[in-house]
Length: 322
Figure 1 (spheres, rainbow, N blue to C red):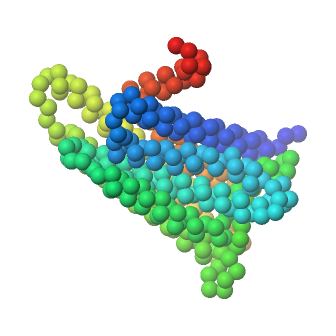
Figure 2: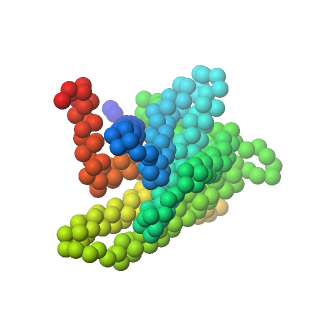
């Protein structure tokens, strides 16, 4: 008889797989659309387009690590392949790098939108754009590098009755800092630096952007009607981006804080073990699913983006025939 845990794990693996495919295809379309637009207009990519491409790159990379973790972090691979632990933890660190780069890029995009609305005629130099992207990946890489030591990873295909579990790779053996303390520091930095602060930055910039849009005056009835529709779409887009980012990551971060900072001493034995409960694995999926949200959101609110996406699908389905 098939166990209930096996059904739950199978469903979670399907969610992870679907998220990976959607992230790779969706963000791949963002690249295709951006370069098609550049080719058709002959103009250089705007700073907003470059930042969106950086966001798509980070999200696609995050989606790409999901199927590789099924291989590198499988029980068979970890037990039978030399240096398998290094591949598993490197893939996990790469996923964290992509997630953090995506988060910081969203802050940069929020600032770029506010800058364009506030000063539409002011040009943003290419050097500043490159510096912002470089800063994004350096900060993300510093945190991801710390995850190469004493890292909790999910392991897959444990047995016929359980498909997903977890273990700690390369635990700390230093007498000055334990594995638990190392992971506490990382969790605190993750929640503060890559959730609370970015959420505040994005929220404040979106509010400032919406206030600027709402106060802008347009002369002419037709121009006002067009501007009003565009303003409504822009406001909805900004609000949904903030809500999706906040809600997709909040449950997992709350669970992290509970596991690492709220457990009392009588739960010390459970505290020292990694969490592989179904609720944790579902919240983990909810967090990484953010890598496929952005193409969906932008295609829903941008008619031009949506039209090009449909044309791309028609080209793929009909093999380029008109």
